[in-house]
Image (cartoon, rainbow, N blue to C red):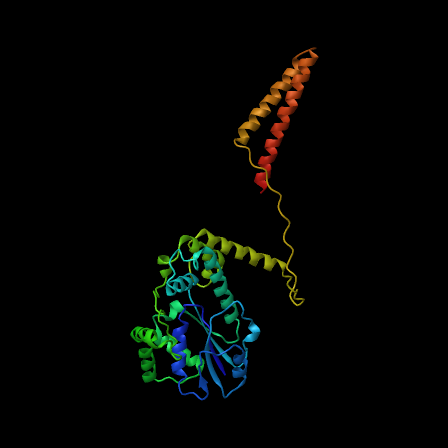
Length: 334
């Protein structure tokens, strides 16, 4: 059996490791060496008498084929990726001008964390937990992990484990790490504890770093319950939506022959011309002008040119009057 703690960087994975290690204490075959290699994972997963605990963070050199899909329990934690990267910078004590920081390195770090998220969450039966949900509920986290690992948990054992991993005990381990190095069971380093607040990235990241991170993760952040705060983050969301629409458009759904075909849509109704303002008044005026020009054309005598002009005017007035009356009737019929 393989128990692999594989959380996003700085997402509470060490706390999950410690609790799981305490829960599994005394189980047959338990071992948790720090120098374990990837090639050891498959063998442990295939051996029911072995119980190998290991802790890794995703690296771009990983491939899914290196990690067994049977005989393994994957314990994955994640958090706001902006906080994860900001916490890495604080842990490394990187100042804002440190060449290991900046927009480019922040963007690459974001890609790495999200690639890891995709891989770990695709593992069969992976246990997935959100840092912001469990950081202030350690008892709930212990119970959850005990259920996942199929370990019976008494209230006394629960209390003891919570005391073993509280913040004061962790600070003592940090001091011990300064003297004797990293303990294989606790995995606490000398610079392990930084600002664990939600949104602490605001006090750490530069504007350029934040924009670079959200340009890679805007859609992921929103999907996982976080808010984006830059135009780069909103651009990433727009791109993701366009990609989803394009992928949906390329899919050809299979027709269900047992389902009757939908009824054809009714023919589109022709648009109704707009009603001319004060239509009745214009109709009366044009009718009167038609009558006047007709009378003048008849009574003007032998002046052919004048009769022609008046006749044309009469026809024009009559046609305009007919159009107005026709539109009024169309609207009444609708």
